[in-house]
Length: 253
Image 1 (cartoon, one colour):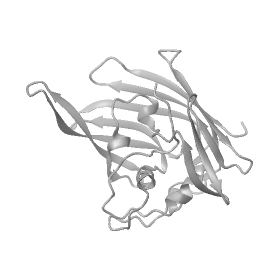
Image 2 (image 1 turned 90 degrees about the vertical axis):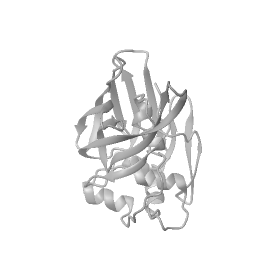
Image 3 (image 1 turned 120 degrees about the horizontal axis):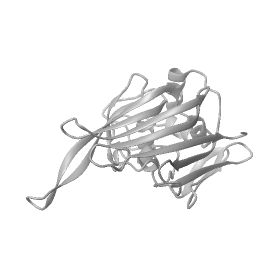
C-alpha cells in the first residue's frame, strides 16, 4: 500500500487560463459556512482482504497548535515557522492523495490538468495522459483519460489541519491567472486542486468515455468531520478489487 506523504493534493496541473479572485479561505467559508476546528492527529488505513496491508499517518503539533510534522511510518515531513508564519517544509515532501492511499493505477492528481469545477468550486474533471503500448508498432502512444470526482456535502476535513500548517495563508496569496507573474509552482498546483468538500468518488474514464477504474468512499460523520470511511476500489479489467477501512482521529480525542 502506498502511504500518504502529505496532507494536501500537491498535484501537477498546468497554469489555468482564468482568473480566480476568491481566496482559498473565503471560498471555503462561502461553501461551508463556519466550520468547527478539528485537527487531524492520525489516519489509519487497513485492508479488509489482507490484514497485513495497513498504514498509519501521524500528525503532530507544537504548543501553538501549529502542525509540526507528518510521519507515515517511514519518513517525516517537517513544517518550519518563523515569527509564527510557515517558512519552509523539509524532509519528505512527496505527493500524497487518494490515488496513492488506495493504490490507484493512475496518476491523475500528479500529472493532470483541471478541466472543470463544480458549483462549490471543487475540481470535478481532471484530464491526464496515459501511455498505451502498441504491440503492432512496439511503441507507446499517448492517450487522454479523465478523472471525474464527486463530493459529499461536507467540508474538506483537511482544511483546518492545512490552516494549522500555515498552508491556507500561503494559498490565499496565490491568484490562478494565466497572465500573472510567475509564482511558486507547487503552491499554484495545490490551490488549483484543493477541494472545499470531501471527495466521495473518483471515476477514471478512457478516451471513449468508458469507466476503467473507480474509487468509492463512504463516510461516517460526527458533525462535519468523518470518523471512519469504507473505501472500495473497482477495476473493470481485473479482479484485483480492494476494500479498505479508514479511521480518522482528531487532536484531543
